[in-house]
Image (tube, rainbow over all chains, first blue to last red):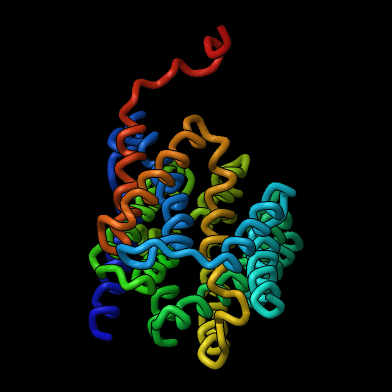
Length: 103
Length: 249
């Protein structure tokens, strides 16, 4: 319990520090092309990794629940159709819930 | 949230009649867009609250995270790693690495907002994807300032209240029966989707997915995400193509 609070507050402080650094550091530091490119690519790599680990990572073991996989796949189809985040979310959880209920 | 937009709308009308605060043409459109973003953030916040308590956080922790961290992707990442039984340090690193992008919003925002002294401390808290995007999209610094504050404050209010509502709802329900285990991966997918059009985007995403998948049996939960971050750092160092024009030859 306490560990979660400490982690949470440390993460909050760190994230705030990053926001503040952006407003305080001289622009030349952050305007460096390599730095900017890396910063732009970081969320792409990490968010993709989060999708993968959410679906398959059970702490050093592979796992997979086909209901969840099907739900996220349905969400991906909604994304391709240009739907908003909230619609994608609703499609994904509804598909998962319905499949789990009937199969 | 509604209160905030109502207040902004009122001050705009007052300004229009008295011309004390000279109106600018984008103001109403900005306020409306900010209200729309706030609405979506409320729903998104409900999701965050529900997923958080389903992952073992208390209601207070879920709300505190939204109130003091206030950066969605980092929050979801931290919750996800903790839920998977990952080490707190892995969750912390993932949250911070995802928060790095907020620092880069500072470059254009400093030009628009010109925050000085203590104001900077307060302004920093409201730097998120949406407030930065709205501010940068405006034609004048003045409209940009209005867009930043209208979006940042509206979003903050609805995101935090949404998290509270979601955490309260989530405490009493079977999240697995509602399919909420699909919520986090679906949201991450939706967040990364528009970024894939970026140069190197698809290649980096694919490499990150392969690295993360391969690391699963080798390292504790949370660490595969850090491994994937290394892919982005590596790809960022590759020589850049000259901008446009020479691309097709």
